[in-house]
Length: 115
Image (cartoon, rainbow, N blue to C red; front, side, top):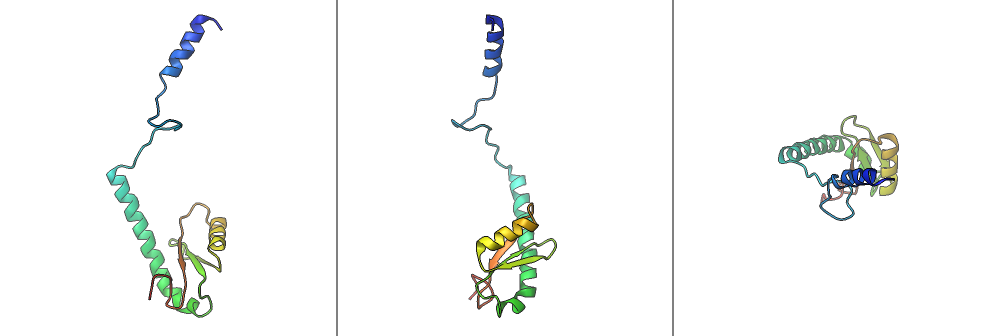
């Protein structure tokens, strides 16, 4: 490689953006305030839909599936039951790989967190 080509290569490399932290490949791009609020409201709507579905099916499940986990897809109303958290996560990712599901644990009072 001659000195002219070497110099051009060095100039190209020096014009690349420098990361803010060592070892980081890409610049950190935090969410804007409006984008954050929009994502938060979408998550809240998803949780509210799942909560309505859980309230509808909870009386039937409480007797037979105490201490089991339930994953609910708020958009379709489909839910999965498993005795382990890992099992319900694996099953939900198998059938809905790109969907965020809401996971609860059923107990005697209906679900964890309820007395």
